[in-house]
Length: 186
Image (cartoon, rainbow, N blue to C red; front, side):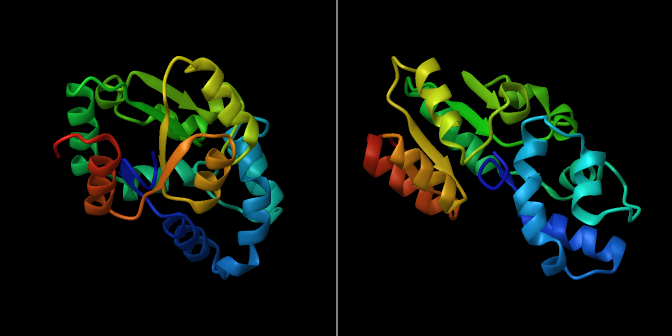
């Protein structure tokens, strides 16, 4: 969702944290990456996450959801493309790594348009863990799945599980790739 349906870059969060704490992002990025899945699957709270990342340093505990709300923008082109696919008889879905706090601020009206929604904090699994792809395949066993993600490691993990995948870079190339793969009119 973030990075495809919503314009979002992890860099925006790193910029927010570094400006708040006046530390370079390279000082916490590796430990951030090492613990983010624990947050996405609900094993730790956002406050516990930041304690692991930056120790006793004071930071707004919900900086992730605040930054997400402030900086992310719904990509109406991608949403309209999903709507077009649905109009052509395809089920559409979301598989997203998300914190509970961030999930709560998502607009329900467009989430409800999706036939299948898998949020990491609810299912207790996060991309690129192979188990999340097994989980989705099991629940959608009667469907052929086409997975779209903006992170290569997630696309690679899905491919290893036999799920056709597309690396999202920008709308026009996604539209062209979908048109080529499933022969729908854009």
